Image (cartoon, rainbow, N blue to C red):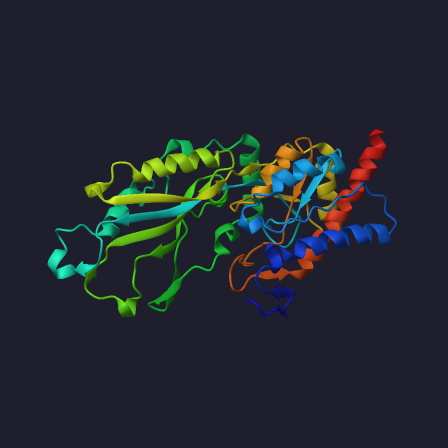
Length: 371
């Protein structure tokens, strides 16, 4: 992942697509407008380099720089994804996130399982009981009603339109485990094969993932020992309209209160970030997006929610409440952000850069027409 490799139009390397290319693409879009003597609005670059760490310093900087930035009418952020590599994609929403470490302690040291099991409850079984308060393990649905929100009508309509474009590729693009069964290849299945529901599940429904574990020896080192504790790193994706700070508080109370067997159960929060729902698209912006997509891809602009979290988008919306938000990116099928085989789809990145320049030029034309 740390040695760049260019193959079949893809630049492999961790951080290239998410999102090291963005500064260079932004500068290239501006330079090309200048090279072609295309009129453009005043453009300000705000380069922020701690997004993967939560962007906690960004909002104070935005507040401090507001007088220099002036009246911002368009924000361009290139840290998002794409439904395919065949058209421009505008991100319409982002999920929020709450994370932390859940730890269940039942003993002060490991003891022989033959001596104690059956009498001393397994810390792993207690962990399962505690997580059952949060999630229906049969369906994956999160149980607290406050972790859910209603999907806005316009986002539902956009999901249906996007499902018609992408079809089964919505879920088939993932690297499913598979095995041979009597000469046929059997693939693991998603939670749904309905494209509309698949889009909504990864963008507007809360979901729990366990991303790390502690208290377990490696398989080759595991003996007949009842372990003193089990700890899980939890990653909870929240719908765009759910307040993350409130969810973190509720999560801690839900997991810690009234522990089974009076075990020591603690949830140490790793913080949270509230999701984002884009403002309504103005007619000039929608027209500019479609014109750019047609000009550089030969297809209309697509609209898609993303399941990831970009903490700075809520901050930018708070800082510039009247601005249109052009949130796009190159993280399309199999680009695998944060993975060892992450890649930047270079032809798509070029067209996306041209589209950004196209929209900025359209903004000037719009301003001139309404002056």
